Image (cartoon, rainbow, N blue to C red):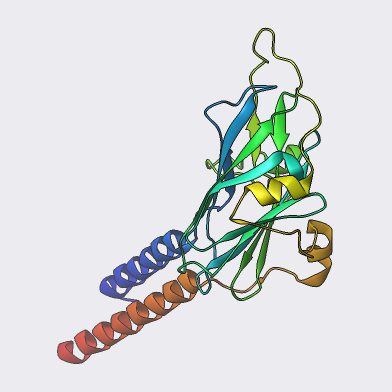
Length: 240
């Protein structure tokens, strides 16, 4: 192999590695935050952001299982994607509507009548796309440990860490009935038959194929390789 051929081969390998590395999408996840993340805080507004990890379909529904200490009737819908609706379920709630644009994140906010007296709250989440694919952010504890590259491993549920309760804070009485809360919230629908995270697990598995970014990377590498081979042959013919 000539020196030029060796150099070109190394260049192709380096280009392929760089393209494939950049084609791997960043680890998506669901985040929750609140300006009043404190135990026993009343009328606390929580904002959720569900990042999209599909290259072919937009997010169409977010299904949440509420942590212990928060009942579905304690939650009211504040804001979300245009046209999306809120509905309560037996163990939480769902927000859904027309699928968002491919790659767009879904952000929405709720108000919780009172946060429980706890150190942290985990909100198990099912993120469904317009094509039926489901991302399950339901793992707790060590499954969400950092992988050493700034990303969390597995599919961790979004967790809200709470500060200690303010001095004198006390639990409020029982929450209003779900029917009363529904009538007070125009954007709310009656609870539907949305599947629980366990049921959705049995219904559908995530697509394990290559993403669109990975296929694009493979195509780019092939084009570069063909160009290199053509250049080597052309140079060899000119030297004869």
